[in-house]
Length: 439
Image (cartoon, rainbow, N blue to C red):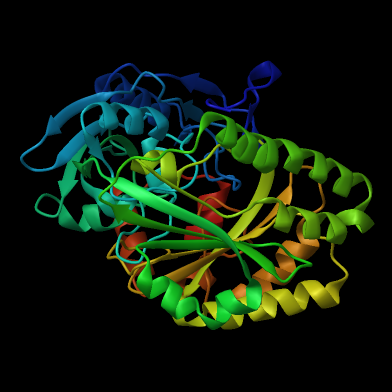
């Protein structure tokens, strides 16, 4: 899971098993110079170029039949500037390693997603996010980045240097160049108290605005076919540290969230009729708990059950209505959905193609276990999301194209114009980018 699965004969596959590609060649550059040389050589050979992280995207955003760049040698922290409150890290560094290394230095990111297997550049380029009232996606915490463009030149960008590139390249979809280093804002490490507790779906919807207002990080999981949710509130704490005990942690995170859940998914796949009954049990299996720990131990959790996912950002004020429609759709459809629906929020940011660009957003994610037919569920959910001008996560399944995005992203043309300037010959093109950005 930590690195991308590669099959026989040089076939590359993503983590969710939704995408396979056969690149003409693979390169693992050990320096920015080697990377620039590989890009220039690909251009001479008329091959398209894609950098790939850990393959955690469900879309074919990283797939190529040209040159596949693997960043595993471009890892580690380059520089910590305690005065400025920043850390500069090589693009191929997994978030997991960054979090552990920062903690050792007494530092932390302000917010993060719930999975930390991705590389920093893969996570930021696709707009990976957690949940937050005031703190936004991982990309919104970027202070500067280094990018190798189509002609092999190295571009540094920040609010002061190449600001128009910085506005777009923080979530660049791999369309503007290959990111080689990222400078993140960091702060002295702090403690979070997490409060997890079941709550009726109707109550969460009725009190959503209060739950959002009163907590720095609020999220919940709704179990389809039930009126139950599991809520999670994370807030900064003066301490003391009270981590989840090893045994309780193993029982709740490994056995219930991964082990029993995996068995339930197998049963549900074999006998779909059992899913509503299993959902009732699952939704009651996780009891309330409170614990206090450093951020990455609270924000992130292991995900061992493989799944496919669609996630849309809707305007935050539309989230309750959207969820009501989603619940009604599941109930009337006869669908059997064994995986909880995840709901998170983010404040508006100023990144050109961020799902939260220019608007306070709520994220609704629907999942299906890997190997189960997901099309009907995802298609019906997508119809609801798009009716609310939803913006799909760039790394998760969706069917939208450039025409749709031009309507829901006010600055869409700003991005495509920059791409015309930085990559006129479409060296970083692939089928996915043709669809979402236009040819």
